[in-house]
Length: 247
Ligand SMILES: NC(=O)c1ccc[n+]([C@@H]2O[C@H](COP(=O)([O-])OP(=O)(O)OC[C@H]3O[C@@H](n4cnc5c(N)ncnc54)[C@H](OP(=O)(O)O)[C@@H]3O)[C@@H](O)[C@H]2O)c1
Image (cartoon, rainbow, N blue to C red; front, side):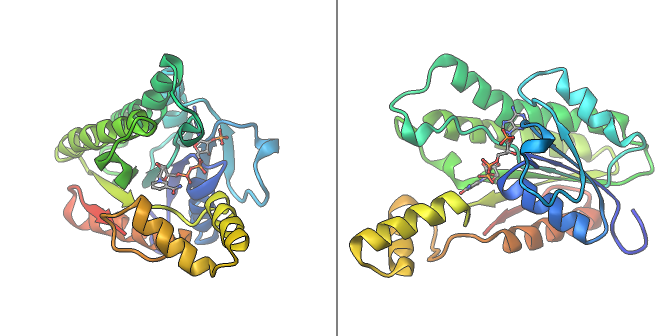
């Protein structure tokens, strides 16, 4: 970690969505960032102002490769990779998709973090932020495998936090509700146009129905997520333990 609070960061899921946005924002702040995603580098939307590596996190052998990419350790790790298998669009997921979901969403962040901790120089502090979802508290016939993968991630994260107590490292969870991503925004806009309704009203109604436990009226923007990731990293540096956050 340098005097200005930046250092070496690893972001998973860095080819799309929140992971790509986080990797870009960290790079813009002066962090030296490695981002891992599944698609090839040529298929990542520009700009990509960081070291992008195409890596399939559903394969066990990927974790040691990615963990070792820093050489002399990491200051910040953000686990944002997720496999949804388009579960909303499909009546039922097969065994293979359910297994891949568990591998990418739960097993990869767990084993990758253990690999990183094993390789970390003892004097170098590492903050690990695990992105989780409010979806872990609910399940219906379509979302159950996804919710289960996130519930498993929550428990594995608790185990990692315990592991960190003996080291100079901290593991925190960033719990999120629905993000303001392009696909959701386009869907809500299309509904608003079809109904001749105000887009903000449609968004409010959607959130009330889809997330009745969350008192939010707007989708969660990436900038707020980034501020919270920074906060969790600083909190980790202070207490060396684990912290939670719900936006
Ligand atoms: N979107 C929401 O509304 C929402 C709500 C609550 C929580 N969250 C959480 O926020 C985080 C980010 O979600 P998002 O919606 O921004 O994700 P996203 O846009 O769907 O991006 C997922 C990322 O994970 C990567 N990935 C998937 N399978 C992989 C594999 N086998 N190996 C390596 N990388 C793989 C993807 O790579 P490729 O695209 O290259 O395959 C992509 O970079 C997730 O943890 C999610 O659970 C999201």
